[in-house]
Length: 346
Image 1 (cartoon, helix red, strand yellow):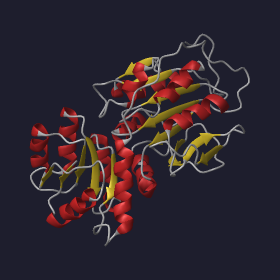
Image 2 (cartoon, helix red, strand yellow):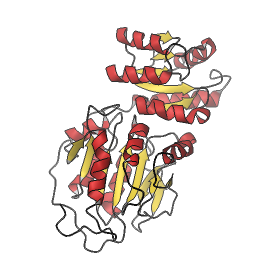
Image 3 (cartoon, one colour):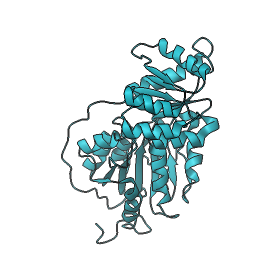
Image 4 (cartoon, helix red, strand yellow):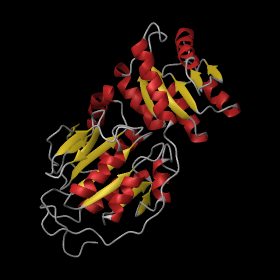
């Protein structure tokens, strides 16, 4: 593990917290972004705690350069996540895995802040693993009597905010489908994320709340520490189960609930992100006959989740980020105003 922070006091606090953890060793510290980039060339840590505001090169640019060259997990640790929402999401778009407000002191002085950081570190350390085996895909999904609107279901993690922004910018103001987004974001700043995302689209973007129904032309974003699911009655709900998954909300859990409960056309999309979340769920959707897309390697800030989807053969199409929005528009054009597939559409 390593630290990039221009504050000696903040660095010392982080050093104290790391010293109290098993299986985490501090290999170096850097006082600015440029030094962090240079240090990574010589010894790239598994996890880098990155401040945002530093001299010579800020944390956003340093994150972008490091993630382009190395497989390092970057956790933004800044004075206040809530006060720097826009910059936090810029950093996540550049490849940071997550963000947390910096503890005001060590474990004795700020136990709650220290505990938040430790939980983040333990979650990030669990992300990578082996993908499941491939399975065959069945016939395309059809239902002559749907009760729900068509749905674009999108899962994203590291690098997701910027990717989602680009996709939503490509969508027209009125669409015949609902959009549901699962983005790995700490619930303490999910409201800020939704407000930030809403700036870039003509579609209304809001937090999904229990009891919501999918509505055409509306973007609903998971915004709690539990997993968002679609229930059998067609309403959205949150569930704490399964508890053992490293990320909450889980993209896999949401996608799998759609396979069980969504009764209309659906387009499943898995974007940039670290780890495997969403790959198995995307495979479930493809197995059920729905079209699926994974972001390609070149345009992904972190090619983890899409790579796992590719290895599973979970994605019917693998597209560059710039092509995903237009592909959604073409898919939407296959539906009439009632959300049913037009005659002769493919």
